[in-house]
Image 1 (tube, rainbow, N blue to C red):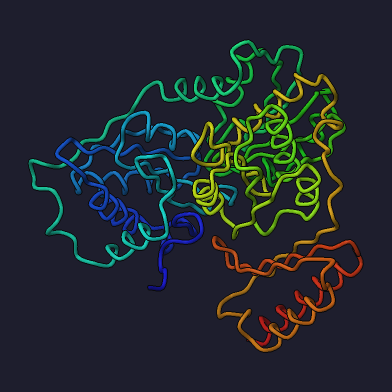
Image 2 (cartoon, one colour):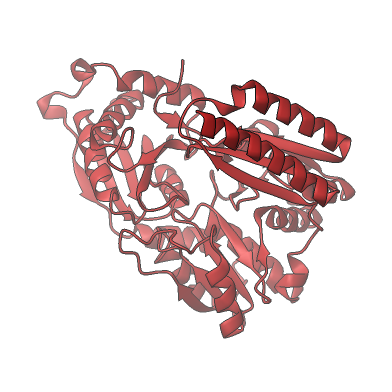
Length: 450
């Protein structure tokens, strides 16, 4: 069955345009509500969102759909995605929903679904829900006396803050650390600064005044330049940049240099391996992670498992093979001892724990390996399937031959935007740049011709 609604991370698109319309959102509520009914108890769904203007529209449409399916809705308001996953389990919900387009601009939005166990849905379950979206489900909806209720839930921020704090040893304090946290004008604008301050840190917060339009706007984990400047300006020990729904983060060291997800995974894996906590003898990452990470882990006697892009595929592999550290170069870090999905705040706390234990500068602690030269470029396209054309196939084959065994080539369509992502890496930087630019040019020519 061809996917019409779901992509690599739930349903995502431009707000008020298919598939991110109120009508589709209401149908998602109905279909997901019907799919997750089990037993005779009052069924419940927890529903969170980030700070986008369109969140109001999508939220109310989802509430209508879930209530029509006979589910009670617990409205969490703006809160990080990992908090929704955690509260799905904590509140014994039948399903959890996060309204967010993650790191995308404000004009996009999305719907992420979690099962009662707090994990993102499998492809199989998503396809089952998708099959219901274009069907007439009226006959299966609740009777008039079985409709669901909706209510706002108080104290959810405090629950998540306490959960995050408990991932550190009880005796650990962040006193003495000056931390700049960039909240991306997103879902963590209240909880992240509060958690860090309660743990004893001196906290300087930036981009924590969301207005519905400024989420991820030149800020957060995808735009850490402002954070780097602020760290330098206030002479902070470290900067933490979250994205719009706070399921990913990157670090900035005391010199303003950005530390990506690969280095963070290397740091945590090494620390946990030394303490005997690392499970499964390795780390799970995607095909986009740097070859330098793989070599670093190999030197430590650990294995790097690679999956397709998408943090839920990382999680699925972790669960299937018994590993407890995984993530993506972009900053999704999954620590399954604590969370069922990427959690920017919890990951940052693990980095801060390493800093406190070693009492060394962040630049020294977080630079675990020298990255292999890597280049990623995106090519936007208006339609069609550029990767299936003969010229593009030939360019890709030529690039693989030129890189040989000394490099890697990864080319894939984005699951959330109309982009082709072209990535190459290898020990020869000039060759890497050449093969990426050659492929990008051929794809651009195909796009222009179309």
